[in-house]
Length: 339
Ligand code: ATP
Ligand code: MG
Ligand code: FE
Image 1 (tube, rainbow, N blue to C red):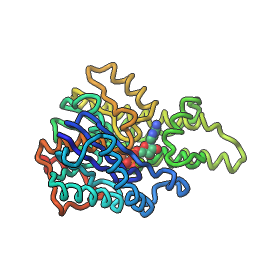
Image 2 (cartoon, rainbow, N blue to C red):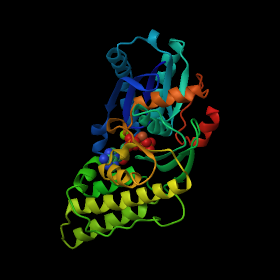
Image 3 (tube, rainbow, N blue to C red):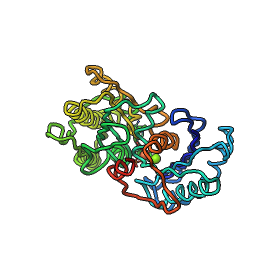
Image 4 (spheres, helix red, strand yellow):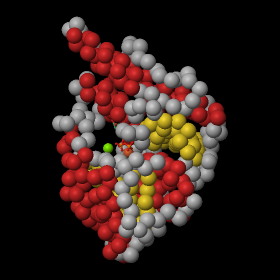
C-alpha cells in the first residue's frame, strides 16, 4: 500500500508518503514554532492560518520528493483529533479533497495512536504492549492487549509533562517549546533542589505535575524577590529528575500488573534524553523489549499517522466526506470503531 498522510492537529503542517506502514518515502514537516514563540505558546488562530498557507505546498513537496503521483496512492490518512479544531479542519479538508478527487479511501487516525505508531518504523509492534505517551497535551499509559485495542490505564490529572516543561522553561526565559533546552541544561547541572514527586507511591497509574510546576515557579519567584540568582542548570536537573522519576516509577508499577512483551515510549517528550536513559536502565532489568520512537518522529509528523493508518485500515477504519474534527477524541471510541 502507499498512503498519503496528513497531520495538522497543532502547530506542525505535515504530509508524508508511507509504504506498507513501515517505510517512509517522505515526511515533510513545516513547523510554525517561530510564529508562536513571541506569544509563549501556540495561538490557535495563527496556527490554522499557517496550515492553510502551508498545506498545498507540503502536499506537492511530499509527492515530488517521494517520486509518486496521485495515481500511485492506495489511501489518504488524516488526523481528526485530538487537537485544535481550526488546525484539524485544515488537514481534514485537504485530505477529503485528495481522497474525493482521486477516488481513494479516507482513513481517520487518532493523533495519539499516531504517536504510538511512530515506533512502527523501528519494528512492528509486538503485543501485548504498554505505551507511555508523553507529549505537549497528554501524559498517559496505554495498554494494548492486541492490535487495534487501546486502553488508558493511567493519565495525568492536571498538566501534561510537555506542558510542564514549557511552563517552567518560560520562567527561566527559555523560548517555547522549552523541552529540548531544559533537557540540554539538565545534563549540565546537579540535583540541588528538592522538588516534589507527586503520587509516585500511590497505588494507581496516574500522574500530577501541577504541584511540581508551582514549586518550581515559587522557587524562582522567591529568589527573584530576595535578589538571589539561581543556577538554571541545577534547576533544570532537579526538575527533570523529578519528572522522570515519577514517569519511570509509574511505568514500572504498570508493568508489574500488565505483563507486556514490549514497552513503547512515544510523544514529543519521548525525545528527552534523561527519560530515555532512565527507562533504558530500569527496563534492562526486565524481560521486555523497549522500543523508543525514533528521535525525528517523537514530535508531530505525518509519517506516524501513515503508519497508524495502515494498521487501522486492516481493522476496517474508514471515513466519508462527513468526517469532522474531534478536538477531544478519546481512545475507546477508536478501538470500538476499529473492530
Ligand atoms: P499532543 O500530542 O498531546 O496533542 P502536541 O502534539 O502539541 O500535544 P508533541 O508535538 O507531541 O505535543 O510534543 C511537544 C512537546 O514535547 C512540547 O511540550 C515540547 O516542549 C516537548 N519536548 C520536545 N522535546 C523535548 C525534550 N527533549 N525534553 C522534554 N520535552 C520535550
Ligand atoms: Mg508541536
Ligand atoms: Fe502530538
